[in-house]
Image 1 (cartoon, one colour):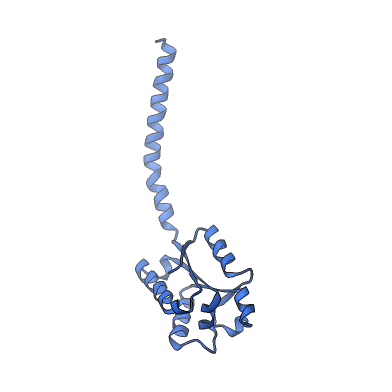
Image 2 (cartoon, helix red, strand yellow):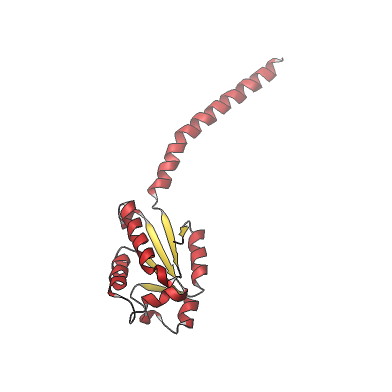
Length: 153
């Protein structure tokens, strides 16, 4: 084997070792940087009979993560479920829960299509909602594109 080939092989081995060591050093730093960013989750709610269940899941999510400052949560509501958030029909429990979640930074999105179908505006909903004008499912897709995990309990 000529010397030139031996030198090239030696350089290749050394470069591989350096790359391996560099990757081992940088992997924990990359993992720590990813962990430093709060996880993001979007809850999808359209079933009227799942209101309490989903709100309970959101509270459990905050509790399980150690508080609202450790996770970013959005709730997108459309279809029949939106009726539970009409200010004049909402139960005291739902009203209190939404009030607390809004203080914790929960993004509350109401489907614009459903709002039109139910003939309501943001003023008719519990405080804190924003209008997902292009639709609830579009808002969910937008949030997923921003790195939100999708949950539909």
